[in-house]
Amino acid sequence: MRIKAILAATAAAAALSVAVAQAPKHEFRGAWLHTVFQGQYKNQNTEQNKAYLIGQLDSLRKVGVNAVIFQVRPQSDAFYASELEPWSRYLTDGGNAPRPFWDPLQFMIEQCHERGMELHAWLNPYRVTSNSKQTLPQNHIYHRHPERFIRYDGKLYFDPGQPENREFIGAVVDDIVARYDVDGIHFDDYFYPYPVKGKEFGDDASYRRYGNGMDRGDWRRHNVDLLIEDLHRRIAAAKPWVRFGISPFGIWRNQSSDPRGSRTSGLQNYDALYADVLLWEEEGWIDYLLPQLYWELDHRAASTRELLGWWNENSGEKRHLYIGQDVKKCMDKGELGQKVAYTRAGSNIKGNCWWPGYSVTRNYSGVADSLATRHQATVALVPSYPWMSERRPQAVGGLDVENRKISWEAPAATGTADDVNRFVVYRFDSPESVDISLAEAIVAVTPHAAFEATAPGVYVVTALSRANNESEASVPVVVR
Image (cartoon, rainbow, N blue to C red; front, side, top):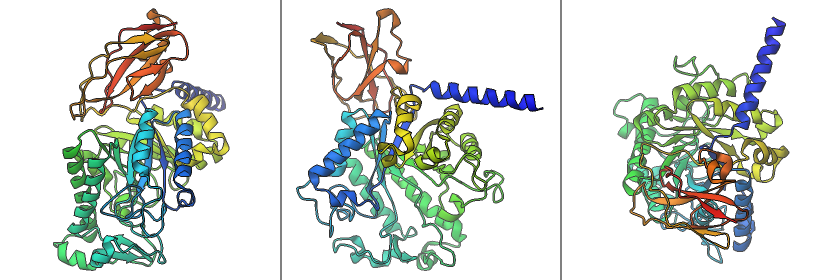
């Protein structure tokens, strides 16, 4: 038995090593950059903030990140120019515009796209304050409609049960999608507030008015369902290529509550936060799920090993499934390589997202070194979204080389998910070795119809649509 155990352990270790080494060409590699509770933005001037964010993005690109999830509405306020809500308390004082003026969301979109990265605008739907001492600027909607808000545990929230609040949140999303070239709209795990022992969320009035005899838990879930369905409809109608993603708490339900649940014993999304995320995928209201599996692999109450298998089996067939990873837990427990390997082994898992991105950029316990040299050493493309479009762009034409600068023709935009918005540049040693399935051959992802080669070789270019479908390779060109 001991020999069998040793052989099994050796085989498992070898499988993990192979999975890590074979970094896929198509993989979501995200990083969250939160602004809530962050003091650096208010403490820096405009130019310092721009330089700081450029440094963050440069560091993330070096470790293979291809999608940045940037928090632009942390507490019913804005890290962008909004006529609906005040400027964020984490950027300026009193809801005033920054001076000199800049728009962080627009800046991040431009900088991410310049680096071939996606930008997902991260919003918190219901949270307004995070403690009882915070005050709101006079232009905040709370001062016009205080009856639409609930104070719970000293914090202020939109009442999810009131249709007017769903309409207002929808208007906020409409505004962002209409005015900004975002690649995605992102919500994390905050729907109804996390429960506080001995305290009840005071939605009696809206329940009496709108509950229609439903069980209160079912009614609360229905309220969130209505919001998610409405936002899906709004986004798809305005810009059908913009993804709508949700990053839920890592446990849907425990098996003790539901036979479909996981073998865990922690807080439940469905019962505590009233977020039935599996329904949203089933109905096609979202484009990706990104559960936060922040525990160690063998945590007693919530094993990430168990949850990886559960999410892989219960989601990811109709929409994308990515996994949220806690950098500190990965590094402190020495589980980074194992977790990356397990996600890549999951048939329905298409990538990871790192929390927080700031821990990656400051190289906590060497995480950036490990990602850059081993786990994300090659460039990856965000997987395609076939329910948006399966059409591949036409092959890139008109390639020309002059003094190592490669240029080509860019197709005109048509306002659909099939529009080309990025190009992938590959380098090979010879025309015979051209194979665009090789991630290691990618040297750049760029929004420009030109690329400055730094090494001689044979180059080909492909086009990427907004739905992340890739064209065939162009005619090869030689750079000497």
